[in-house]
Length: 349
Image (cartoon, rainbow, N blue to C red):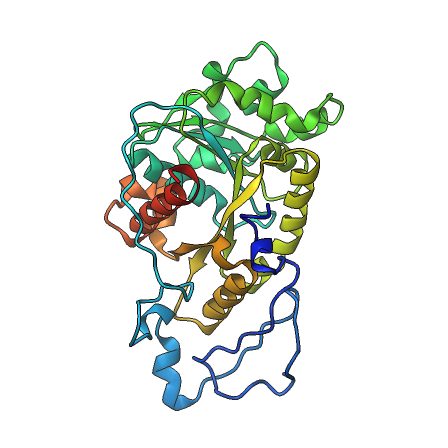
């Protein structure tokens, strides 16, 4: 955790840095601000109305307001030049990455589907693991949860069921799926009485490591036993985080859980990155949340930011990734850029 997590920047997720006063808002500090004040992630973000003469400047996305120096991305940092992913001759030695956040509706499933599809476009062999009893990942890829003969629940709790029997092909070349449905909700109760219950998912995924380059696990929105299983099986964690104040508050609790799993169950676990989702650079709120996120997590925050677009909802209804449903859209381009960044940061590097 030390070389990948926020600790490398001297600031933990639960210790937010001094409030940064955005130059895009009023020039005056809020009345309650005093030098040396420090606020936590749970403290409210101050909202200030802009001067009328600066109204146009406030409404513009942050990356478009810079007139000198290198172009700044939505995170307020210069955008890196990401290399074109190298071709892969053989597959195997998969890196297992969990999409984890105990808050729901932050883009975990959307990111799992579209990042997986983008990685498959770059020639990687990808396995998606639906580890949420709601089965949203499976539904988002066109499966009917009521028609499943076998799911990951059977793989976890029935010794005679093999991985190959449960894996299904998707409509994306190079991307497979371990589906899930509501049956998985019973697994959390049944696993409580098992020996080494936290390592159950790790054991059943072990045969897949030799066949895939990347395994992405879509976790449920909680920090229960299923999520602990996913973190124990993983090499890394990507934290999708909606650029909204309430989503920002819960990251410290997630960081505490990841630290405990690293210390007690999985010493190799690292936070691969924090991903800003549902970002709207036109709003002061969105930009302030992004500023504080970068202050707290530093370079752990991905340069890529996923903006709001109706195309994500449309592609979910169609049962396919945005990279195939609307391949030339800004959302598809964002996930291709994220795939390049993930490859450069933790797969090809």
